[in-house]
Image (tube, rainbow, N blue to C red; front, side, top):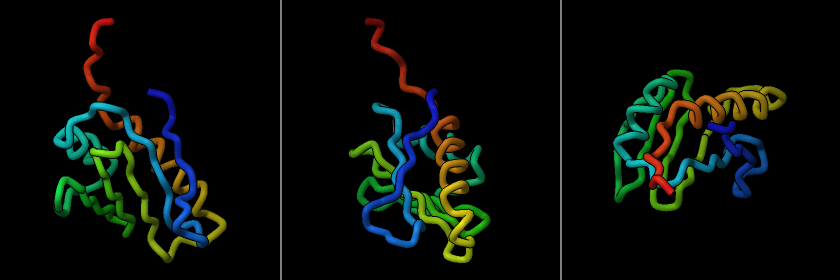
Length: 105
């Protein structure tokens, strides 16, 4: 899988929120299995939205319907390190998610 498209979320000016585009057609159960490989634990699911936590205090919110996730970095991460950390975690997340089966076309 190509590295994730990780970019700053427009809703944050302090580099704590990052948008990740996810593979199309991936089943929600596959997100839970894949993200567990990145030390992310499924905390809860509300209305189809999946909330994951990381041992270092980061969170990932996955919205399967839109194919997007929001990476929420812990506020104690020093600002100069935030972009590098977001890119590293976002790439790990994208690589950990299974690709949906191809349609054979």
